[in-house]
Image (cartoon, rainbow, N blue to C red):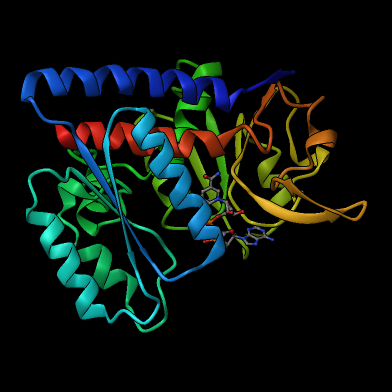
Length: 282
Ligand code: NAD
């Protein structure tokens, strides 16, 4: 079994991004900028935002964090986005989700200029991805999954990929990326019948569910590649630990390659966010 090292692949991408940013600085005389907007004090969001800022600055971007109080109205947030859309020094805009309940997330995402939407959640980018249009900003986690799969299977043509989870941020966009690579794609979800059996037909099995260690040994075809997107906090021996959606210890000896949690898909998400930001600045 090969462990697919997301930290290593992410570091490679970040090195390329860093070189690309310096190239842009030389060409334009200005540093590409990423602005993160955080509304409220959600503790998990604070950690995510700090990590994104730190990595963005390490890669040479001009990082800017706009913090707004949890009482911010939708129209005030839209006014901030409007300003960022027209600011030439800002190439990427990321609004950290979730937003407080008085704000409609879809309205906010839809207000970001599609070419600055480095999360790839704008409906224009969703449509471009669906159409196979190369201008699409592709959501970062599915893009990271694809890069990891390609480290072990360079030619995906004809492979049967089974995705567990149909969310707009992971399952659906990943299905489009894999179709573009000529995989045969099956998307499964909470209402899928006989899920273990469907999964057992996969050459590539991707779990993006949010249920700790859902995928068991008999769900995996011997030699399959397994990508675990899940990040679940569970209590083990009185301690909080992170586990994925795959029962790693049971599956590791059946799969030909598998991503660990942590250290698999997680680091790829920020790396792809920054490669999207570099692309936006170009
Ligand atoms: P979501 O809750 O939006 O979607 C979950 C999907 O799983 C749904 O489509 C649902 O139908 C399906 N599902 C739920 N229970 C199921 C079951 N028992 N059997 C089959 N399908 C089932 O979640 P999401 O935002 O797509 O995230 C999924 C997981 O990935 C979460 O653990 C999340 O924390 C993690 N995640 C990780 C990263 C990363 O950077 N590594 C990024 C995004 C999400």
